[in-house]
Image 1: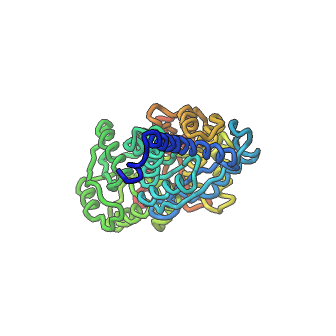
Image 2: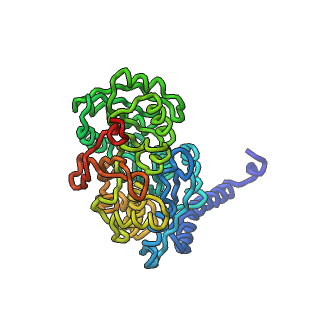
Image 3: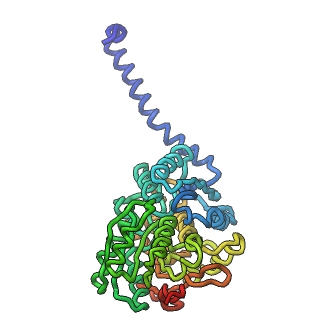
Length: 431
């Protein structure tokens, strides 16, 4: 005990302790007072938006920020969202940050958006490399988070989730449409698996192992390989030896382009090639060169023929695609649907919550039951909403190099099939 403390009477000592306790109590009350004052002074609602604007999966963000502006403008045209506790409407604002397709960078940016920018809600999209780390940060810091363009099988391993909600497709549904599309082509039903050693590739590989055998397909799996692999000789030789006629891949666009070029140079051209992730984008098909993208099939999360409308604007899928092409001069791209739908979910939850209090927003998100541009969206107990999906094939285009046509609808019979799958050998004139 210090000399000062030794000189205190018992009464003086208790008096000082009382002041100290009182100080702690007042200090503990300050954050709530500050929060109330900050809330009253707010003039907008801020959405944090981590996106892979650059890096291996940047093809997902081709429609940003055009799409983001479309959605934000639609919400703000009447002044924004009414917040009952403040007695006024607040416009939405969004802060887009570039994760560079890097998980570590994504986590760092998510933390900065929460701590420094004080976002009210997080909205993240596009592959596990961006969604998973951001969702992890939001879950730890108890910030409401919506994610799209991320298959549910890749989202769930990061759970259980209380604060994060994923609205996207199931790999199971993809496989149903892929098998349906493969059955259009006469093959020996031998499938070569080509999946990267990342969460995306692993989930697809596991789904393939579980589904293909039951449908009479034989799987030739040469194992996982790291992203950025430059030489696929071992894999190609293995597929040749296994007499593979269907190639099932899940890779980033640049890696698929490298692998697919090597397949052609080595004389290995399967009758069917389904390229998950890479096959989503017309730009990725064009980047392969020549007509090598012709006949490739892939998953469909959004398409101009889908029978859905935006809950924000009332526009159809085709109207959105036409608008994007008119403004950008580029071909429509699938993330338009998923990206816009996330904003629909965020706006709908905030309108129903009528507050920015995080727990109330979280509860509103959990109660989401909304028809969006990517289809009906209702969160299940695991905080995932399963949206419709199908299978496309890239055929020769008229206005653009390639055109995506629906060839199978799998588990969603309300999605319009435009034609049956055609052999790659036939489309490329090699048959």
